[in-house]
Length: 216
Image (cartoon, rainbow, N blue to C red):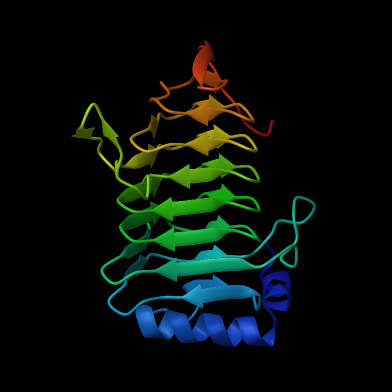
């Protein structure tokens, strides 16, 4: 994203907010970037390890716009947020990022209306493209029992490098989406997706193998 355009989209309030949280939580004054309409509720004792830049509420030209709706970033005490890449991790406008566990993201992009709730662990690798209205939920938020036995409430979600996730996808707890795979729009992913496959459906199943994808 063009740096001048990004500064314009931030607005004065967003720029001040970004500088405040960056200096408070990291040693880089521009490491955390929020638009002026991003709500921030970052708890004390939240650990940030931001290698370069993590932005929330920013949109790509033509795909979305930073004023499309409010975003929200919230954490609880003891949470950790990491950028593991070398350039930029970007989460689009009208997104909710709530972290109670360990969240990490490489040089990847999520479009608008992402809903990410990390109760345990969610990791996103490099080169991941996430379309609009995607849900990543690693915690049931309630205790459930089957035949009197409690079901594990939280399990990690891991999205490996170079994954493409279509719009309106829900990825559930305990799922690993392997490198180079594609998840078709409208899918509900409840089990692991093998590498270089196309998964689709409710629940999602592998429908194609030997899959590659890109912009070319």
